[in-house]
Amino acid sequence: MSHAHAGSITSRARTASTVLRGWSRGHGYEITPWLGRNFETGSGKAEDVTGEEGRGELKPLSGQYSWAGRHRAETTARVTVVHGPDGLRAVWPVWNRLRSRIATSGFYRHPEWYRGMAGALEPDPENLYFFHVRGSSGGEGLLPLRYDSERRWWLAPLHRHVNLYDAVADAHLTGAGLLDTVLASLQDQPRLPWDRMVLARIPLGGVLGQALGAARVPAAMVRSDGNSAWFDLEAGEGPLAGAAGAFRRNLRRLERRLEQRGRVALDIVEHPGQILEAWSDFLGLEASGWKGARGTGSAIVLQPDVRRFYEQLLAAWGPEGKCRIHLLRLDGRVLAAHFAVVDGDTLSLLKIAYDELEASLAPGLMLLYKLLHREWEQKQFRRISLVTDPPWAERWGPRRERLLRAVIFNRTLRGGLGASWEGIKRLRRRFLGRDDTVCSTLTGRRCRP
Image (cartoon, rainbow, N blue to C red):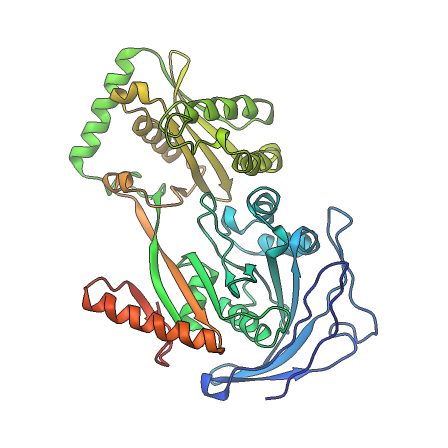
C-alpha cells in the first residue's frame, strides 16, 4: 500500500501532520492517499482556524484519503491533529459547533472540561491531542487522546476526578467512521509511534461505544468497565421505582426523624453571586470527615490541582447556570452537599459530602432523597446521573448504562506481543469463571458489544 506525507510540522501550533496508510485489505477496506497543495482549498497556503478566545491561530497540515468498505460507499475524510492548550483553543469553535448539532452530549464531552484538565490535572498538557475528522458529506467529529511517549500508548484522558470518556460527532459522521479514520491516520506517524490504544470508561450508548460494535478494528479487546448509574425522572412510578419497598419505607422513616429535629431545608444554589459561598460550605464539609487531613487526605481542599480543576469549572459554567451546589440544612446548619453540573436534560452529581457527626440522621441519603423528589415534580431534567456506580447506590434501584474498556493493538512487534498476552490473560479469566470480555477481534472476529 502506498503512503504519502502531508507536509512538515507547523511548530507554532504544534500540529502533527497526518500521514496516512491503509489497513490491509483483509480487514475490510482499503485506504488510498490523496495528494494536493492544500486539501481543503487547493491553494498553496494552509487553512487558518482561529479560536474564539483569540490567539489560537492554527495552520493545520491535513491529510485526506478515500476508502471503500465492503458494505459502505466510498468515502473521503480529512484529519487535522493538534495538541496542547493552543490546539484546544484552535478546535474550540469546531467543538462548540458540534455540540450545537447533537441532541445529547454530556459534560465530559465539553471543551471546557478539557480546558480544566489541561490547566489543573494533566502533568504535561502538551500530551493532550485532539483529532478533528471531517467527512466528505460535511460530517465532523472530535476524538481527544493522551499520548504516552514512554510506553508508546494512546490513552483516554482520564483521572480520578475525570471518570467518563467519549468522542463527539454529529449525525453525518458515524462513530465507526471517526474511529476508523483516526486509527488509519496513526498508522504511519514516525513522530508518534504507538503499540496500543486504551479507551476506558466509555458509555455503551455513546459515540465510541456504538463505534466498537460497527468499526472493523483489528486486534482489539473490549471488556466491561463498570456502569454509570442514573435515575429516570420521566418514570411514571417515580425515580425510586426500582428500589425495594422496605428501602423506600426506611427513607420515609428517616425523613420523619430528621424533620422532628428541627427545620429542614433543601437549598439549590445556582446563582453566580451565591455559588462561591456554597462551594466554600461544600469544601469545609468534605474536609471535616474521613477525606480530611486526619483521614485519607483526599478532600478537594487538600489537593490544590484538583481544587483548581473544579474552580475553573465554576468560573466557566457558574455564570451560565451549569453548576449547582445542593445543600441540605437543619436549622440553617449544612448537613450534606452535592457539587453538580447541568448539561441539557441531565443533572450530574460529581461530588457528595456529608456531616459524619450526624450519621444517625443519614444526611447523605436524605439529600439525595429530597433532590430526587424535587426534580421529579419539577420536570426540569430527564435524568439525574451519579456518573459512577458506587456500591451504596444498589439499594436505590437506579438504571445503569454499561461502560466499556477497549484495548486496540497496533501492527508492531510490541503491539503483537501485547495482543498475544491479552489473549492468554483472557483464557485465564475464562478458566477462573471471571471473563468480563464483551467482544474481541484478537482472533479475527468482528467486535459487537
